Image (cartoon, rainbow, N blue to C red; front, top):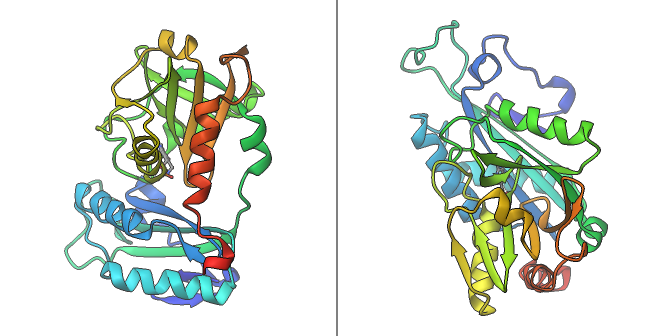
Amino acid sequence: MIWMDDRFMPESEASVSYLDRGYCFGDGIYEMIRVYGGRLYEPSAHYERLERSAAEIKLSLPYPIEEINRIVLELLKRERLEEGTVYMQITRGVAPRAHGFPAPGTKPVLMAYCGAVKRPVEAMAAGISAITRPDVRWLRCDIKSLNLLGSVLAKQEAVEAGADDVILHRDGIITECSASNLMIVKDGVLLTHPANHLILNGITRAVVLELARKLNIPAIERPFTLQELTAADEAFLTSTIMEVMPIVRIDGSPVGDGLPGSITRKLQRAFEDTIPSPQRR
Ligand code: PMP
């Protein structure tokens, strides 16, 4: 079941206009919300980020957030989704192809669907590998824009190198991963890039920083270098889909002792405690 053209429809009926600005220019924004035990995880934070992304690209949402939330909840209900994700995107609509904004009154197009996605429990226990690559994306990575070519090309390099993910750096300063934020631990201190225009301010990142505060793990939001990454005791990424994911190999060398670190595991467990259990529904 998909929401498009102002209604629910089966996947087979959904189609995109060849003049949709999302299709032609990547002119739009998106969000992805986790579903645990049939419920949305941190929905307000995701909707706030959606509204912020829309405002930053001067896009007015086709419906109020409350209405978008009703559509999303109805999707979950119709699909009887227990564990998965909801994806939604809004483009600047369908209009003759020209770079400037379309004529006033052109309606933005909302598309949303949900699907089953399991928690990556095995990978979270074992850890994953990553390569490092230059961050060639634009300078507004704080906007969750549909323009993802920089991330797509970087992730494909990881795939071709036989690694699980890619860590991006701008002139030697680590920013984030292709679809997640990066944190490292050195001498018991957590480091992560500040939430400015060079990274997406992840919802999971915020949850983890708050958990670190509660657990008295010192956390500093400051830029750090490739050299600091190489010398880190622990490294992990955070995202809606990957949660708190240890990175145990970077560019072929082990991180610390090559196993998920103790602070990483502590934060993983604390994160898991924030997930509503089916019993608590
Ligand atoms: N950075 C980028 C570039 C992303 O695409 C994502 C995934 N949305 C994240 C960070 C992590 O954000 P979140 O924790 O909100 O999923």
